[in-house]
Image (cartoon, rainbow, N blue to C red):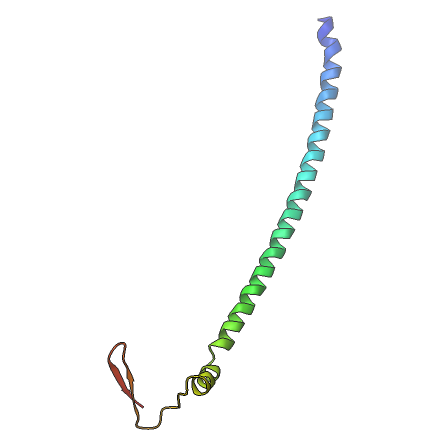
Length: 97
C-alpha cells in the first residue's frame, strides 16, 4: 500500500505533463493546417484568375470581327452578298443568304 501512495503523485505529474504537451502539439497542428489552407486558397485564387484570363483570351481569339479579318486577309474569302447561296459540303446543306 505504501508503494501505491508514493506512485500516485508521480502518475498525476505525468498526466499533467502529457496533457500540456498534447495541448502544445494540437496548437501547433492547428497553426500548421491554417498555413496549409492559406497556401491552398492562394493557389485556388491563382488558378481561378488564370482560368478567367484564358476565357478572355478565347473570347478574343474567336470574336467574329477577328475571324472575319483573318478570312479576308489570309484565306482570301469575301463576305457573302445578298442572294448568294452558301454551300456547306460536309452535310450537303445549301443556305440562301
